[in-house]
Image 1 (cartoon, rainbow, N blue to C red):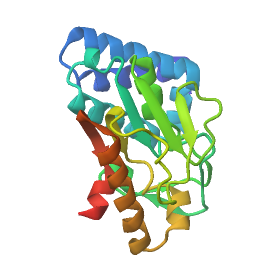
Image 2: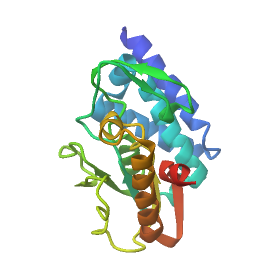
Image 3: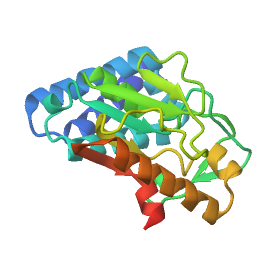
Image 4: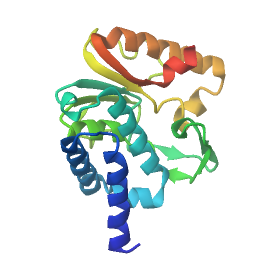
Length: 220
């Protein structure tokens, strides 16, 4: 892929993400952040290999814009991303993604995948927030606060203080190949979802925001 095509692809992503915010300063800020993600994590190269990475970035930005219509309000917010993703996720030989793409099934290639990298925490960090990511996978190279946690264990998040987060989201767990393999039955997944919802309610500040919660959808 030529340099001009790569640049055009990144510029298109920036243009699409800028539409989430009406303030020009916010639009310029999100453009800067995308450029940083490209520089630090090879975003464009990963999108070229797995086009669904672009969908994930836009989905995360859309949720952020819905929760925080002005990016200035994101600064200094302490935000928890439960099952934030990691740098060690691999897909089996045959795997279909659906929960991340509004019900669309996407056949993913086997081997290492950038689909489950901690994109939301990286985005938050560059926007001046204080992201805290929890995941069972490898996060050692990440500069945001992170903890290795097995979310299948009841009480795994008990070490985090009550009402200590301005915002919380979970959206990477129930669609991850590792989780599906460990908890194949719906009853098992509902049990995990119930525990995550309990923790979210405990951890969120009184005026905090649930940015997104797949767990809540599971326990309805």
